[in-house]
Image (cartoon, helix red, strand yellow):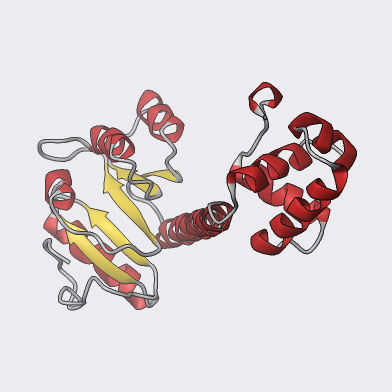
Length: 225
């Protein structure tokens, strides 16, 4: 991990961390140290930065994490940093902290997908609860993306004809209807369908349809030949 840290774990490797990491962007040194101590007391890994730019220029580990982000920062503000992360498709859950919060600011932060918006002074437990919620959100997102990636890999093993059969089956068509759509014999569709079930590792038709929904697969019948 490149980037300043007030934590003795600053030198941990970027490969393969198993525990959630809390990133902190806060320009106040004493506040950074206070947050580092708080998170370490409950066994969390912490990496801190003094500015948004510093974090943007750092190589971040690909693991479950969240970001505790001060609103008012030198240079790029916390809210603008939230926008930059979204543009870069970095979907780390954010918990905003500020000593000068107002309603428009909090509304913008929450509309941007922030997990929480805490005004200083806040209770330690408030922040810890927010971190738990944020890391759990990130964990679920990562699991969902992994599921989609695995299904996509299986889908790509299907032949073009098998993909066409899957798309039509996913719309609820029976074998006879699929055969009519594709200009095939019904027995041929049954064979293709069996191949699809096996390659996609589907345990049932309902399971196969759920997989298609997860992948966002739909059939444009006018394109099926």
